[in-house]
Length: 340
Image (cartoon, rainbow, N blue to C red; front, side, top):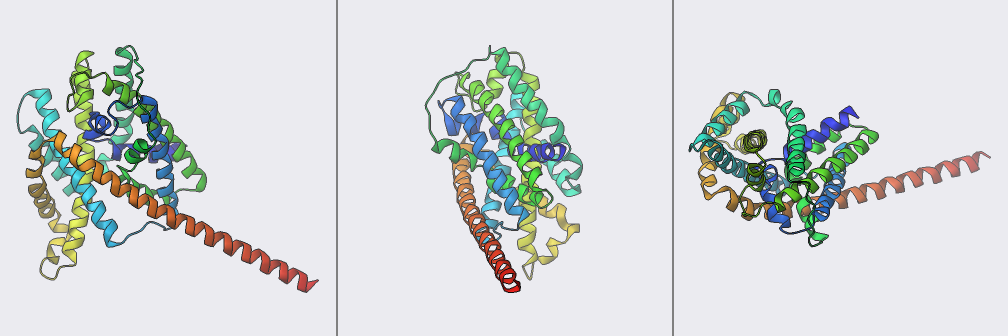
């Protein structure tokens, strides 16, 4: 169970960034939908995670150029939205401009030196974020809102984090047994169901249509600083993960260039990281709200396409395996009857 929880928190830590922890992406995808409908996304998310864990275990994950490009785009969108969200949350907390730039530079240094030492932060951060959401929910007198129902909305939202978190989980799937994969899926489903239900009720409690609903509601219940610090922490950890992903793909492209391949050397990683930040930081000036509202639905659609493709490969694999097993059984029966 300990392994399952570790992988579960790894997924949630990769998924929870500025859009999720601030409530913005929930407001975008679900609007006035019922919290129970939103919570249903947790079930779909868990099933997709299980698919990628199994896909990783049996080497079914596609790795063509289309997947690489889509994953790079997802990483770039995540990076830009984290940069914009970091600037906004730091300004909302302090009233000082350009502190998001400081966060970005620190993140660049962490990625250059290696992000392994900061991965443990998810183990602490995720329970604290969950606890914060529950405390805000309780301080609001635990409202449970009604709303519309839809089966397509939860599926659409479930595809949002597939390109980054799903590909990450596929690598973890190689290390897990079938039982551990099952426990991981259950853990992700339970945690995401609870978080999404509570988060949607908190988002619907915001009557100001704020770009960061959780922060706006936390001000009403006297938890502004705690909420701001945890959202900023979630943004930072997600930002360095996205920056690492973008850096890896840029380095891979550079390594295949005759003229630029020396830049792919590990000793030049700091240059590649800085170049990526210089390219994507100006794009973040478009604003956190506009980036999330414009780009997240596209990333979700790409995630759904990848999931459908992986599901088809998994079904084909199962059919071939079943045929091979039945063929082996028939062969054994023939051998036994011949011997008799």
